[in-house]
Amino acid sequence: MGLRKLFTDYLDDVSTNYIDPNDLLNARGQLAVDMSYRGDEVGVPGYPAKDAQRGSSKNKDTYYFTGLHLTYRLGGGKSGSGIFGGGRKGKGLPCPVNVY
Image 1 (cartoon, rainbow, N blue to C red):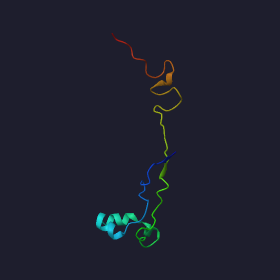
Image 2 (image 1 turned 120 degrees about the horizontal axis):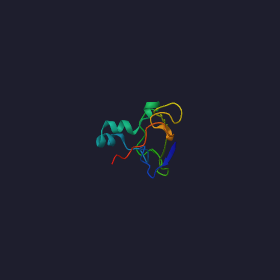
Image 3 (image 1 turned 30 degrees about the vertical axis):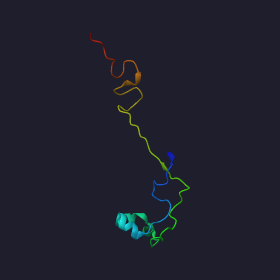
Image 4 (image 1 turned 60 degrees about the vertical axis):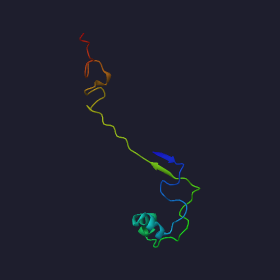
């Protein structure tokens, strides 16, 4: 697990104020308008008014992550068995011999 605090407020593109949707449409297209306000997807209809507060630039973004690490031992079975022998003398592959 890990937590990262960033020195920017634009990871999630939520900061400062809303722009007029018509200005955004003319400058960037319909996809930009659709992505700039997604409240309608969760039941909050209507695009906010121009200059309505969208976020706070006082709080920088953070994110967290988690992962899972799995290890599989080739050769299975008891410790020391398998192709590499686990360091036991007489087990596994022999050391290379100098043929010079």
